[in-house]
Length: 100
Picture 1 (cartoon, helix red, strand yellow):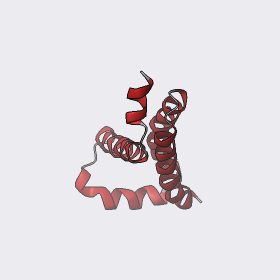
Picture 2 (cartoon, helix red, strand yellow):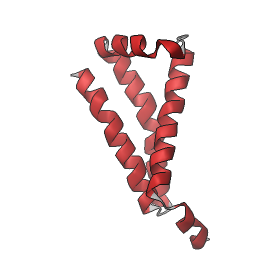
Picture 3 (spheres, helix red, strand yellow):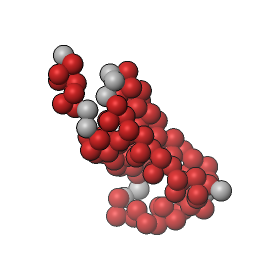
Picture 4 (cartoon, one colour):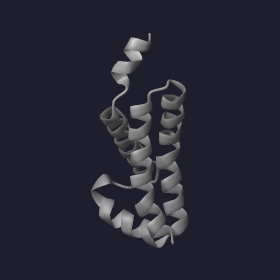
């Protein structure tokens, strides 16, 4: 069992899974609000002006990644853990910048 875990313990796997989670949550966020994906720039400008909407978007993107961090921590997949944590940090910096 541990041998199979070590195959999944790669930094790039954590980075890709973290990015895919953010993309999936962004698509769900747009779909749930009735926006089209081709209006991405316009919606992001709106989110930059409305800090409460940006906070909801940030929580929506970060929470699934935090679950992935917890899962990789519990399974002792340390490199995958580092990759997902890097994605969380790099995705939160612009969001926090626009909030304040």
